[in-house]
Length: 132
Image (tube, one colour):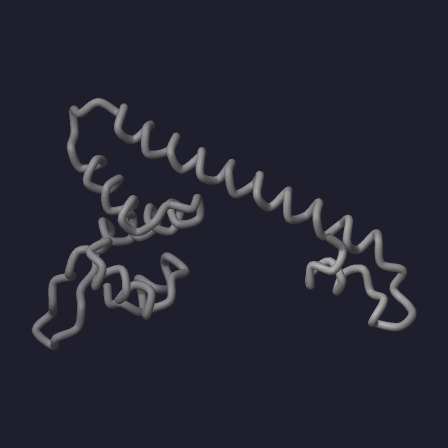
């Protein structure tokens, strides 16, 4: 199949497919005599893997590592679990940070009456450090 067909089957923009090729996440495809890229079902499966891993927050480097691990049959899955555990820890840290930001914004919004002279706005005062 050509790149447009791969794009449709995986719901991945063509530019993204090319980006993944350039960054070693997808192998360089075979070329037809006409020069068109030729993709197969393995490419569809690999691209779907990449998209799901990206959706879980893995970086391209981490995805390349996971793909390398997945191609070593008979190996222990401990390295895959470790990679997922590290990613989970990072996600949990981000959630903690986002909750802290949410709580701070909520306090600012709750402190602001939403009317009156902007020079007395508690949100702007807090952001400028005037409430310290």
